[in-house]
Structure formats: structure tokens, C-alpha cells
Amino acid sequence: MIAHLLMIASLSMAQRAVPAEPMVVFVCEHGAAKSVIATTYFNKIAAERGLHARAIYRGVNPQADLSVGALKGLRDDGLTVPDQKPSPITQSDVDTATIMFAIGCTLPSNATASGKADTWDDVPEDKGYGATRDAIKRHVERLIDDLLKKQRSQGK
Image 1 (cartoon, rainbow, N blue to C red):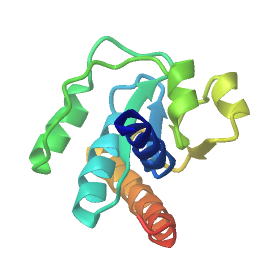
Image 2: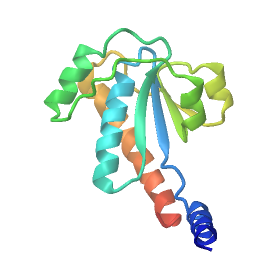
Image 3: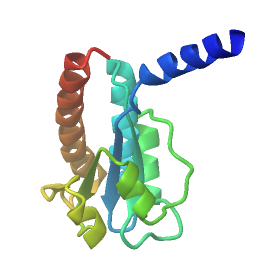
Image 4: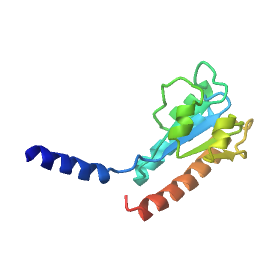
């Protein structure tokens, strides 16, 4: 009898399981600067606004280390800098992503074919950290606003 009640309770809890929080994957050519800036700002602003989502950064052709300039800029902005080395976008990233953003690069075909990909082609390449950060931050804030609307409409 007790085993039967435990089984019913566990099935009931499984049916009410909360869906996984949205996963945003930011991708830039080297996975070392633009995607890192986007991820850092996304995770900070999302937490401040109560959005249940997180972001990761990836590269199409990742370099060995994070961009010194991006890290300096993030530190100067008062943010905690990430310490994960750049890594390539994988099939697992594509599978778990809610949405992916290519920032100044071309995603691999499996990512574009997923139907989850979008691009931010207006982020400047050669105007310094401030201009890059400002363009990325505008996109991130709009994205968070959209995700918050969805989160609220789903009652989370």
C-alpha cells in the first residue's frame, strides 16, 4: 500500500515538473569577445529582472583564450568576467538551446537548420569595446523583455 502511494505521488510530481528554463546560446566567430559580452550581460540583466533563463557563449572557430579587450571592458563595467575558455558550438548546444544568436558570424548548418537561430549583424567589429557592448546590450535588453513577457504569460 505504501509503495503504491509513493508511486502515485512520484507520478503526480513528474507530471507537474517545471519545464527547463530557456537556454540562450550566443555565438561569435572566435567565441572570445562578442558572445562573451552578450552572455555576461544577458545573465546579469536576466537575474536582476527575475527572468528564469541563462546564456552560454560559443564560437564557430574558437580561439584558445578569451579576448583580453573584452575581459578588460567587462571588468571596467563592474561585471564578473567568465573564466571558461572559448569552445565550439556543438550539436548538444543546438539541441538544448531555446534560441541562438550569431553575432557577426555564420552559424554551422545544423544550427541554422534547427529553426532556433537568429543573427545580430549590426554589432560593430572595429569601433572599440564601448560601441560593441552598447549594440549587444540593446539586443540583450530587447531579448530579455520578450522572454519576460513569455515567462509571465506562462505563469512562471
